[in-house]
Length: 102
Image (cartoon, rainbow, N blue to C red; front, top):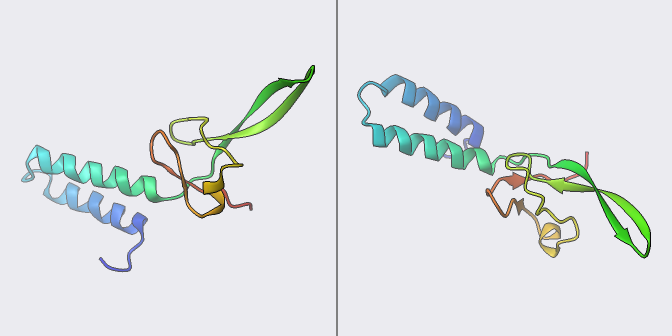
């Protein structure tokens, strides 16, 4: 399986689970489901944006704030130093976030 993408591994795990579902103990089925869930979180997803309003010095400022597309956690900060270093993950659910601009 070396050289396969996460999506290819996920597809193979689904096929494997469907083929041997009748003979596989439930705890193995759960292991496959957890592996798929972990691999899916490694596939970067674009953040969603919500408009947030802040009051500062008597003025209301509205900004588009990024949030996790999976759990909707608003803990993604574009000004975090970590973001400029590479991969960004949701601090709540672990979803990999793609902050590249299209």
